[in-house]
Amino acid sequence: MYTLGLAFIILAPISSAMFLIGTTSLYWALIPAALLAAAGLFNLVSGNWRLRISEYRWLWPFAAFLAVAAVSLFLSPYRGQALIKGAVQLAGLTMMLLTVVTLLGLVRERKEFLVRILHGTSVVLGVVGAIALFQFFVNNLFRAEIVSFEFLQVFGGGTGWRPPGMLGALFRANSIEGEPAHMATYLCMGAGLAFIRLGGLGETPRRSPMLQRVMPLWAAICIFGGLATSLSIIGYLGMIVAVAATAFVWFRARRRQKKKRGRLGGKAIGAAASLLAVALMISAFAGQSIVEKIATIGMIYDDPGNFEETGLEGTVDLVSQGGNRLSALALAVNGQIMLENLRARPVIGIGIGAHPASYDQNMPDYVELVPALVDMNKDDAGALLTRLLSETGLLGTLIFLASGFWVFWTGMCATRLCALLPGSGSDSLAPVLAGLTGSWVGIFVLYLARLGLYYSSPFWVSICFIVILTDVAVTAVRKSPDLKFLPQGLWRRTLLYGA
Image (cartoon, rainbow, N blue to C red; front, side, top):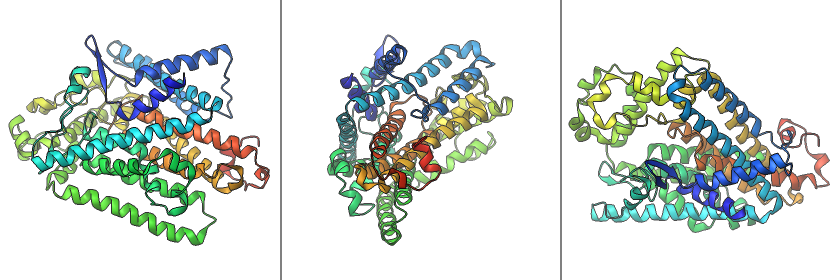
């Protein structure tokens, strides 16, 4: 079971890797997830584990979303076309929730397993970033896509990896991931920890024994190197959000140390500005392409007739004048379809898994002017927020957003708990919790903005880490004789219900 847990965690940062069964491409990471979920379900049914409300409060908002999603599918106007796909989404979400419960149970039985999975994730992320750095410098040095991983397409049926292409004058990097935006998203899993490990919040958290055990210095460097070489707008957004959220959580947790906060705040801002400056300096070599990609997203509000005025009539013109804008155009098209669905069914949406069916029926006519754009991101709507609004309406979207915020709030409360009780033995966990919570915010924003996947491994692994570390921290703090001196507040009641 522990081997399965480690496999699931380590495969998460390379979850673009796929294999072909018949005509269906499946993600490698789903295999250990399914087996872990089955083991967790067995332990729950047999009575070995119990889902106590006070210990699994992170679970119930997601369970509420599952219920709303199931109702949306049952009432869907596309139920006949979307029933199987919708059922798969519900099963995938349930599988990931059970997987998190199972991993939590494994860590409760063997605490050292926590260090293994955190260190394993950092190492894999570091390797992904190192490959991206090598790919970026070699390809740009020789002005050709020399470093390529097209062999991964063989295993994935042509969908597991694709050439990263160029942005302006620069070749982009995607390492062994499907595309640069995906690589940047996965690297954000470790951005918070890497930021602290590199000294972004000062020497004290950087020297935390726990942090040094789980995040090697070389891996921290490679994570940010990979993010910079992705030349991905969405990746830079995730990096900024993750770093800012990490600093926010850390300062909120240690707000008693007011004198140090000013100095640490200056260091954090300086470090974050340096990272952003490097990324923007690399992007500057890409010329006007990044600006064009940002501007293209605005086409969601344009009249289709404007395509002729902007020189985007037909594939030849699109590729020659801005082929790098295809992904942004796909987001715009799916966003337009989402708005149509939201107007028709604002409360509960058209049903989970039904966006592809709606796409076929409501695809704008102008999309056919660009054959490469037809069906692009049709299955996942290109962004989780777009998909949520389209498939589960305002009700499902609000519940899902509340679930994500609850995970963040729990992580921030646990960080503060560790920081306020240094004698409990949990103080070494505080920087790690701050980094993982900040990374989760970055991951959450990136999925909402770019990856429309309900049960993607990096998303749920990020949740898993916060849930597990919070449980470990609360267990340690409950044994502290100073527990009764903790200040009262909502953050305390979040974790110490009944204490």
